[in-house]
Amino acid sequence: GHIGICGKCHLRRRKLHKDTGCPICKTALLLLVVDVEEPVGKKLDDYQVWNGNYLGDGFVYLEDVDMFFSVVYFSDEIKPLVSFKCYIPDCAYDAKTSNTNSEGKSTRKSPLRLLKNHLKNKHKLYICHLCADNRRDFISQLPRLNSKQLDRHMKFGDGKRSGFAGHPMCQFCKPKRFYDITELHVHLNKEHYKCHVCEKAGRSNQFYKHYQSLERHFDRDHFLCRDVQCLQARFIVFDNELDLRHHERQVHGGTSTTSDK
Image (cartoon, one colour):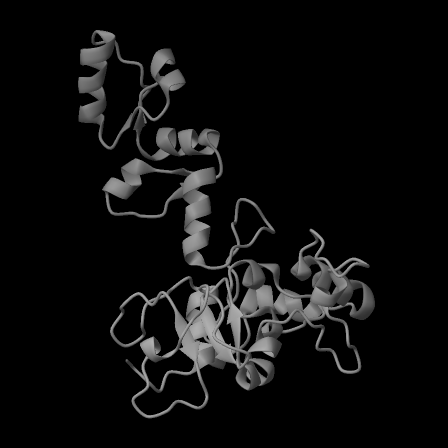
């Protein structure tokens, strides 16, 4: 029932972000028709869809997003957007065309992989794999970069006006980078160690490469129980000496296992 929202914006939401909600009222839209010649007052129910994916010869259906596009609009606007063409001047390479065998059937090779190989081998150019894997934009819209440009893109982004300041690096896994800060923190929490004592004291994001470095931090900056069993159990550490002494009395029978700091 809403009009005036461009078909490419709907496609971007549904294909890249898996968001089927209406941008205006947030209602989940099971099916969309993008018609360039919309009669006044025409509603979705006025379009007669057959077998779930046929709206007549005047429309093209994209199954993965459940959208119909008028043939002309699809040819002019949508097909170039979702393509895996090279788009380097004077090069007509199309990864989707190259992804078919002699019988015209699709092979198992990824069009993106084929395109990346073509760009690298033919033009010495690259597509940022982090932007591609995280669906930052359609592959046709992602820049083709030489090695220096790719390095600058990774470290510093695409300039102030782009709103993108680069892909953050894990300081423990150099030179491994992640799409954004959220992905980096997922990695840090999964693959590395955080000091829960510092976290409790309001000093957040205190990460360590492995447990050995975290244990050294425990021993240096907090109050680590040095009993053999507690060292084997790991993470037996306190933020003050009083709590450590109480632990020693309750668990180890009052024997002090900690040297003076």
